Image (cartoon, rainbow, N blue to C red; front, side):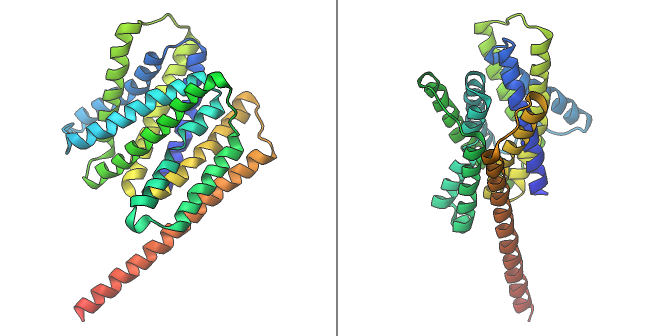
Length: 297
């Protein structure tokens, strides 16, 4: 189920990235995009909690503050990169987060410090490069740096999401608090920059940002709360496949042979990591069963 939740999140985030780019092209400013990203989540989840009489009080404010500090920063930086860079370049930079997680696991991951897992992450990154092959001009380098910083911040936020899952924090509350912070940051900035007049195309794209972001955030939070952070990081690369499909359907952008090869690498990396996790789980269950039988004997 972890894999399924992450695939749903990837599809939604690919759609959200396209909507962010479209909204910016139709003259929406960044605080508007940020505000629309968070508002649907806040409204719908608040109504849901009131109907089901759920408490919005978090189990740990400290954990949420850390997650939201890095998460909101990552969103602003990533959206700025999306608005100013070619879509493929911005996405490739934003999705360096799994690579940061992989290096973190390599250094501090304990039992997850597995060379096979690390190789899978590296294959996935190579696949991303082959699919997107980002090229930058000198004037784009500052925005490329923002995109890379967004990936680093997202990695910290994703690891904190898993910690919240260990604390027993339900994903809906994590998403609600995060979305509230997102709306506050967008709303405060709008008081300074103002609300520009927009056409219906811009508002349609803004609504798309919010709706796709809501479902993507819920699915990703669920995935990271269920199991291996590194497995989820590998599966996150499948966002590129969904983005390629969107490019074919919406813009008629058919990937070339190298791009299809990159997609194959992404799929292989996910399969390798999934196989490794499955075999390790079977070994662990066998060890636990053997210890239980020994104690009973």
